[in-house]
Image (cartoon, rainbow, N blue to C red; front, side, top):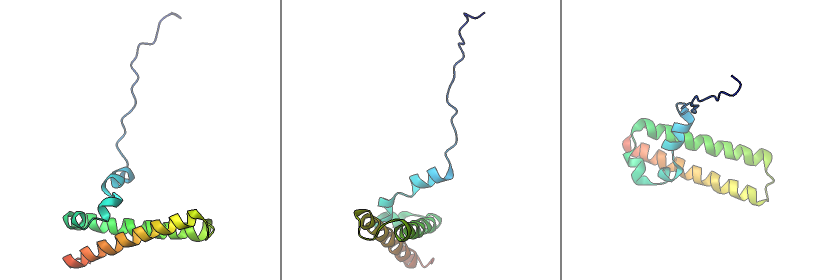
Length: 102
């Protein structure tokens, strides 16, 4: 009995993707900087993207204030990313204002 091999097939369990993973696929930053992509988004997705841009710009700003010395290359990179998210936020707000849904 000790010589018998275990011939069971062991497969990885396929888990359903989390909501965060789904959102990451939907909320690509490049799309949020493209006015044509913003025009094609429905109202719910547009509002979620606005929340996404606001949340990340605030998060990066907090990180810059608390953890990074102001005159390092890391601080400059954080400032650039914060500005990118602020531009996204303004573009989304402009699209929402164009639709009169704000």
